[in-house]
Length: 131
Image (cartoon, rainbow, N blue to C red; front, top):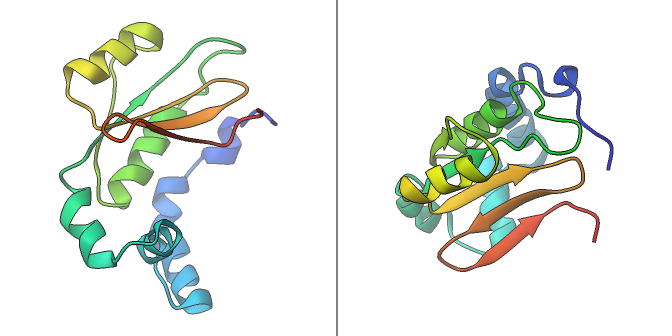
């Protein structure tokens, strides 16, 4: 996997409404609608649950280190999607422990090889890493 650079993620959160509008024009669905379709759930169900789900983003420093603003960008995307998202104040194992202490439902984390979201209720892992 190619390592992201700061330029790759700069202003993503600011561009989400514009991207959402473009996606709606091209597909007839918002980003939330596409997510619901991919999950096979109704949008009403998604909307009734998303804001009650606490999403934690934990920065990890292993490999080539933390990419500046990456964790905050992921949290902003989760916020845009309707989740209650936060970035842990500390990273690595301490940040993971903080996410548990703050009762996160889903934890996002990444290193140089893998980006993963772990649902602590269903015990499912979604990732884009190399297997």
